[in-house]
Length: 299
Image (cartoon, rainbow, N blue to C red):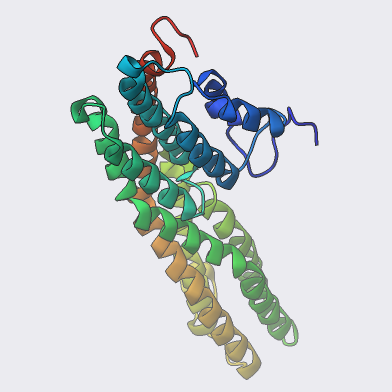
C-alpha cells in the first residue's frame, strides 16, 4: 500500500502526531517517518503517543528556567492530541477507543504543571463522552446481531413459502410471504442507516419500527387470518410449523431492533459530545503548543 493512502482501519491520519517533529526531542518525528508518514490504527497511535510522552518528559535543549514549564506543556499537549484522536474512534464498535480516551484523560489530569482550569472544559466533555460508553457499545452489538440473523430469518421465510407452495397457494398468501421476504432484508438495512450526518434520521427510525410491526402482523395473519390482508387462517400443519419457526427466529431480531432504538438517544448524545471533545482539544492545543514549542510556533 502506498504510505500516503489510508488503510481500511484508519479513518483518521497520523497527522495528529506530525507536530511531534517539533518537540524538543526528535523521537516523535523519527517514529512518524518510520511509519512512512501515513495513516495508522488506534493501537499504533497509542504506542507512539506513549513513546512520545516519555520523550518530551526530558527535553534535550531546555534551559533550567524553562525546563519544568516546557515539559509540563509538552506532556499535556501529547495527551490532548491523544484524546482528540481517541475521541474520533469512540463511535466505532471497539471498546478500546473508550479505554484509550479514559487513559489519556487520566494521564493529562495527573500530569500537573498546567492549571486545571485551563483544561477543565476538555476534561468535562471527555468525561461526559465516556459516560455514553454503554449505549454506544450496546447499539453496535445489537446491530451486529441483527446482521448476523439475516440468513436465519430468510431461510425460515423460504421454508414458509415452500410449505405454502406444497398446497394451494392463493395470491394474497403469496403476496404476504413475498412481503415477509422483502422485510427480512430491509430491516437490517434500516438498522444500519439510522444515523445520517451525525444525527438520527427520523424517517429511518419510523421505517424500521413500522417494518418490525408489519412483519409481526403478516406472520399472525398467515397463521390466524386477517381480512385486511385478505388472508384466511392456515389449516396446514406444515405451514403452521414453518410459521412458528419463523416467528421464533424473528423474535430475536425484533428484540435487537428494540435495543438499537432504545440506545439511539445515547448514541446521538455521544456523537454531539465527540464533536465537543474535538473542539475543546483543538482549543487546548492552540494554548499548549506555544508553551511547548515556543511563542510564534505554528507546529
